[in-house]
Amino acid sequence: MNQTERFYKIEQLLHEHKAASFRQLLDAVEVSPATLKRDLQYLRDRLNAPIIYDRDANGYRFDVPQRYAPKHQLPGLWFNASEIHALLTMQTLLEEVQPGLLGPHIAPLQTRLKNLLGSQDDAPEEITRRIRILHSGKRLGDSRHFELIASTLLKRRRLLIRHYHRGRDEETAREISPQRLVYYRDNWYLDAWCHLREEIRSFAVDAIRHAESIDKKARSIAKRELDAVLGAGYGIFSGAKVEWAKLRFTPQHARWVASEQWHPQQKSSLGADGYYLLEVPYANPTELMMDILRHGAGVEVLGPASLRNAMKKELTAAYATYACRGNF
Image (cartoon, rainbow, N blue to C red; front, top):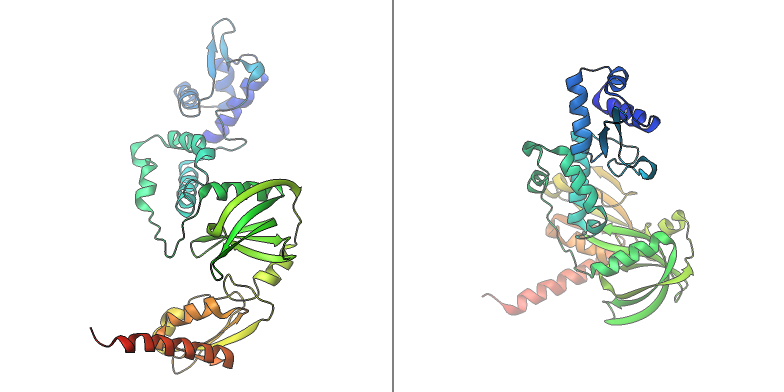
């Protein structure tokens, strides 16, 4: 019987008896008296179990059993050191992704997990020192809006929002039924049914200037419908018409790109000459063009003609910008 099993057994006995004697506990867990004493001490000190010795009853019991709510345990779960490290690592990652996202809600749990580790060698602070996340292009938004949006989403209620459209430099007020939060390239997006436009839309959370939960049931959209509208094309931009871009990367750039996933439905092949052909679907070329431009002369757009011409126009304009300034 391992330690976890012994803890369960001790819990069971203390729940079943008004008071369990030391001998009863020994017989149940089948360990030495010294080991049982350590187990009881661990339950008290590390798990905050309200175990007391009742001299009148000559046994151990939970303090105030009639109102006993097992605050000392993680409901139905016990964790070893590796599992606790995994939970704390997950919390660290979430905190890096969205600071303050879970802090107020899991701080008590985090404290308990830290206490369970105990030894200095296992100090949870080591996790934050040993994990480093570098953000690129992360836009800062109001965390209060994020919490409200997430809460309303899970409650399946509607939101009133003021959304800033960067392309048009304007704000619009909308009533939306939130469907899901999407974390994409270091930024949060809210997929929702827009009651103003009567269609599925994706909103950058950092562009939501005001959010208010309203007591109206949200309209539910099936996942397959969301994916059909928002996931068919390339990146976060959606559109009605999906086309396929055909890209040709030089052997040097192929060493990196060949191991990347640009889209779940992409098609690719590596030629004998080392050139890498990649085909990806897109509905709006904006984000795809930005990713193509990252590779400079290391990639050529083979088709369709509309995308090739758009890239040619963009590169020509970029060249003109540098050429007109001359040398510094």
